[in-house]
Length: 341
Image (cartoon, rainbow, N blue to C red; front, side):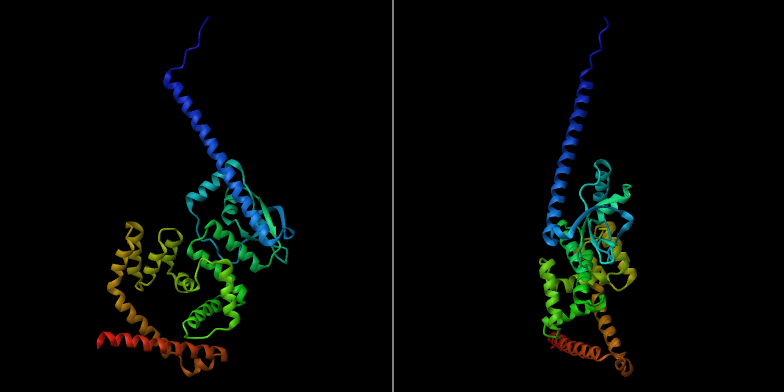
């Protein structure tokens, strides 16, 4: 009677190792699913607590019916994390749900879950599990802000865009007016200007409710300048190639060629912040003078005709700004006198 050949030791060990690896992978996958389900359950409880069960419904929504936000709350995605999410959806299916707002006209607008929605689309889904909240636009943006803050999903620029959009809704002003109002708030806090009580109260209320970890002064002086980043700096920042501090340092370089060269050094060679500032410093004096000259030219361009075309409110604001500028100039002149005396 023929006997089966006994497997050699190396073959047996190899098979055993593969079995152990497979078992370990299954255990890790199971743990990830449990953690994800726990996270999704916490998110749903948060939504129910903030909105109320009577205002939430659940449905499988055709993806083509979902409307994106009117503001861009996420400009870039971490490629590795997105790939992992996509693999998870393809392997285990889409877990949980995204948040949608049912608007008065019946349209369904995305509140939270943009990355999961994009991954589901790439995975071939045509419909997606959704929690639908019957809330107004302001509440929808607040929900988005709270969920993004909980997940720590947005970079500083995206977070700034979301907060700014929320402020436009609560202040009932357009984007430019809202930014101007924020600077008026800062000037009023410094005693250089004044601001309507309602505007001040609304701004403070928004930050207290949805951004208690960000001071208003920091938002105005450090976050708003992000909106004016040169395009090449903006692209590098959104791609995760550039830290906030380096992006702001580079944005102060007015010469486009020099700025691009320094950007390449930072991205390609990992130039440190201190080294970057050292390279920028030699031109900083010239830059300051150029900025002062630019302001002088802008003031000179305020001829009687252009002033006459302003509304009464705009003329009052212009007067306040010029008076504030006068105070600032007097302070700077005293500082200069201290160096020359």
